[in-house]
Amino acid sequence: MRAGPEDIALFELNYCNSVQPISRRIMAGWGWAQCTNRTPDFLSVYGPKPRDDRSDLDTSLYVLPPHTMTPRFWDCKGFLLPVDRVLRSRWCERWGPLAVKFWGFRRFWVKSVDANMYASSWNNGLFKPGQINWPIPTISYDEIRLHIE
Image (cartoon, rainbow, N blue to C red):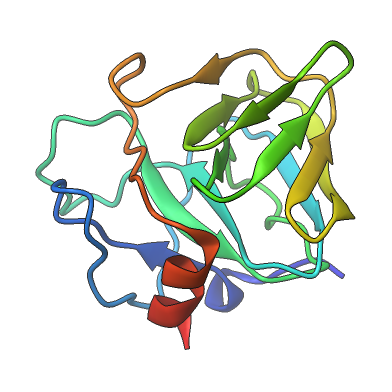
């Protein structure tokens, strides 16, 4: 199922690693990569910054509902791996918090391996907080879910 703009919520941060209430809006971007969320979880994905975002960060976090994909013409840059989740790759397993980056014009997926482990398409980089100019909050999946509902 493809998510519509009304299905993806902006995940507003105050940049001190705490989460603000979520508003229901999505901003279009130039070019686009697409993420398919094959998990039963809400996935925090990186996308274009809203026009009124005054931070110096390059992206904003949005929430993609379970078993959906990002809208057409919306550039998904990657996803956030929360602090209590693990990403299994071909060579190793990495704990969050991490920003998992994908280059533009890619179609990628994230799926559940078990309750706390994800696997994804081949990525273009894994970044810890401070290694990339993206918001990488040190929060758990339960904290993300608490602010969605």
